[in-house]
Length: 157
Image (cartoon, rainbow, N blue to C red; front, side, top):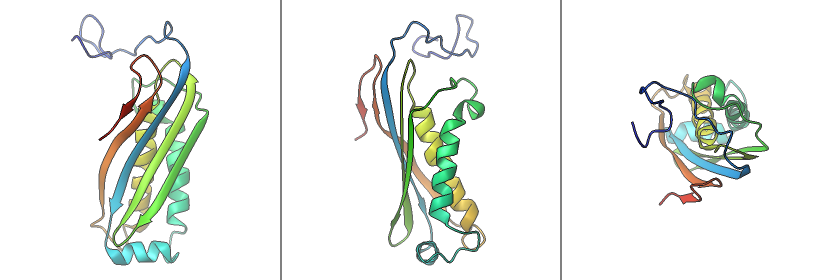
């Protein structure tokens, strides 16, 4: 199973031992979007969704999700995050763009936390708007930047 760090010598799933790694500043940025009917986006922007402030609630959900990533993804390490920022931006005519930035100084990266933040924020937008638009799509969730650690910097194209 060479090349895969989450398997032991017998091919069983295992948490990576990071105790020998150096502590470095690690940053990850993930992005995604929720595509919806233009009328749904207009209602979000006008504050006309019955469940409340869609973008505000989704931002908080994303922050909370980043902090709970190790509870959701079995082989992720519990981390003391130093920063989580989630931004949701209307992208007329028919989408909400989501970006999450996660940072810490530690021995393992924060890519999964950034991706989890974006995904849960997108799911929250869906949940809050599904009564008026069941055709929404969560799209293009991806890592767009990672820095720190032995592997260095990654920038998506």
